Length: 121
Image 1: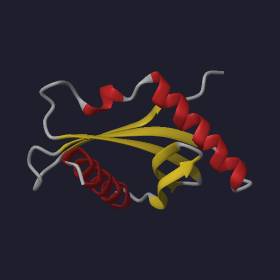
Image 2: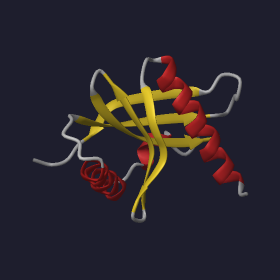
Image 3: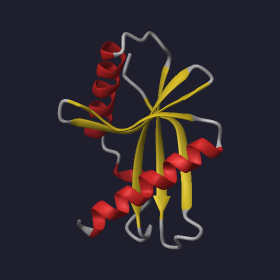
Image 4: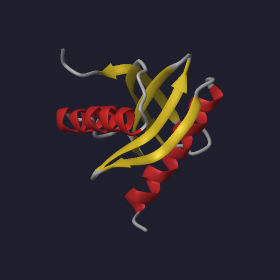
C-alpha cells in the first residue's frame, strides 16, 4: 500500500477513537454510496454526523481541513442523502471535519470542526 493510503487509514483510526472518546457512537466507517465515500458516520444525541477525515504528516503546506473542497462537500452531502434514503431515516444531520496532523504519532494534533458545512438552503 502507498504511504498516503496508510496515512489516511491511520488518520481515520485516530479520528474514530477521538469520536468514541467524546461519546459518539460509530455507525459506519468507509461507507460507500455509488463512487462516493464517507469516512465515518456517527451518532450523538440522536443526530447523524457525517465526518470527513483529512490527515497529513505536517501542516507545512496548510492545515488538512483546508483540502475539503466545495466538490468534496457536495459529494458528502449527496452520499448522506443516499444513506438517509437507503436506511429510511428521517433524522437531523450534521457534517463535521476532523483534521489530523501525525507529525508525532504519540500525540497527534486533532482539530474537530463540528458543523463544518451543510447543504445550501
